[in-house]
Image 1 (tube, rainbow, N blue to C red):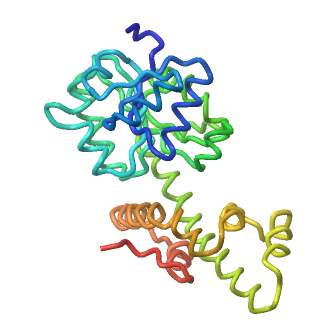
Image 2 (cartoon, rainbow, N blue to C red; image 1 turned 90 degrees about the horizontal axis):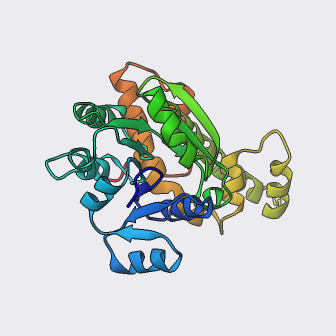
Length: 275
């Protein structure tokens, strides 16, 4: 396979799948890694090449996008003798969509740098539907030339590309965003409770807040679900994970989270990390 334009993709899940489809739809040749044969078959039926070999992907692509859930998955994939960092060619750019600790990605980037491999932070904000519409927001940090190389394929599903600066900055921006979103989610669900107790129809509340100063992205997402329980089922695990990372980073850097921190845990949603 010609690696000049071939984009490798790892993490073909709920969010990653529409990313791969957008890449292919924008005529980027893609090689997607998937362990399960049924996923590979589905991709191939849609004209997307796939492999169950990290080695094949690493040897075939000099731009690789990784979309995994957390630091544990990302570390297991990238580090170690058989990890992605040891398998790719020198000069390869690896962009990580994972929202995790800047320290974890820093360790991965250091290991990659020793092999002349570039790691770009690329956490994003948005849902699978936002990806399908090509409207995602992505925050980028890392080597400027590496960002330039990976930005082109990312724009197949990202409308807003925000260059955050030095390594660590993109993840910090994303963590602050998600802490604020957690606080907004608490306020939105409490607003629904208050509205219910006042006898206001939820449809009226959602219509009003969609075009009023009290509206928020959290309220918009809540209005699109079947209720608070469904809303929590969709976003709860992500918010718990990201809040825990943000709080750990704040303690490490002696940063007070203030009203955002207290509101994130002071509402009707249970956003404490699950033990």
